[in-house]
Image (cartoon, rainbow, N blue to C red; front, top):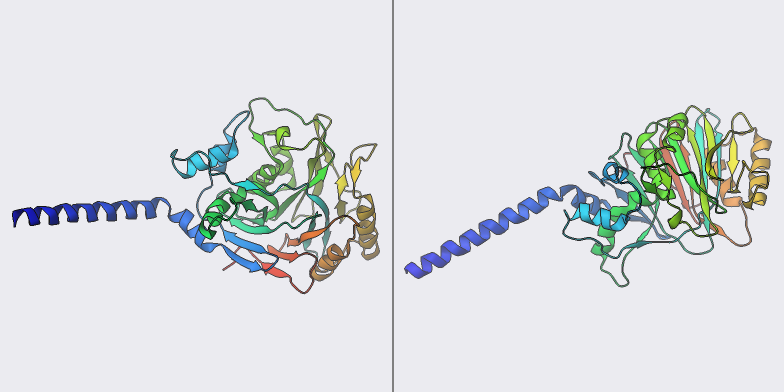
Length: 350
């Protein structure tokens, strides 16, 4: 009988310890669990949506200096140093794009963007709450190992904020990246190395105006090792006041290109602040400029989507198109130029 009582006590202690451990893990990872639980597919193309709860440690990431392994950094933070790398990767993208800023009939500022590719590229719409501002935007999909279970795919997607392609914050500022030919970038000593996607994340988290966004370009060095020998990026930035610029990291310096029109601006994949105008997308640029000139730079959200869908290139097609209303905070995303399949999203996505 005594032996049986001892066994019962041991089992009870084990159950209590197990329960405490499970509860502790649920408390520690409550935000990550909530984030993974929020992931849903909203379009067959596919497009996923994720509402990111809690931190993804971007402020800590910005405190790193020089070279670093992003995946190791993130996984070490997520697992409190137990794991270093889970093998996740991202889709490679040359980010061929057509972007423009205009206004609608109510005077709202519309930030409009095609991300164009020659191959299938899914996206994730991510809302975040871990910066100075709440943000919403698209990210390049994080790949999981082949034949990985769905849960592992969703866990890998916790890294999505670091792979931002375009977005808007609740201060009414928007940014996106666009490919241009490779050029030397300015080097800021004792600053973190950021990829172009991480630059978008930094700006969305911390800048409420175009002026504040420009100042942030002195706080990092663009990580050239993450760029191909043929491709770099420049950035179209706008805010709800109607201010808009293109920032180009070109020939070792930061060039800020002002718009040539009062109420609209177009950018594709060639340097605007270079005599050679090296790059691609000149035909797309002229097409959009002509359309905006005809309307005086005024389009409704529907007309902006129609213009994005009508941009043609013999070698690429839109993977997704977004129209961000910087005044109202609404986002419209359209997969593969399908005008009958537009999703309207705002910060309160639920």
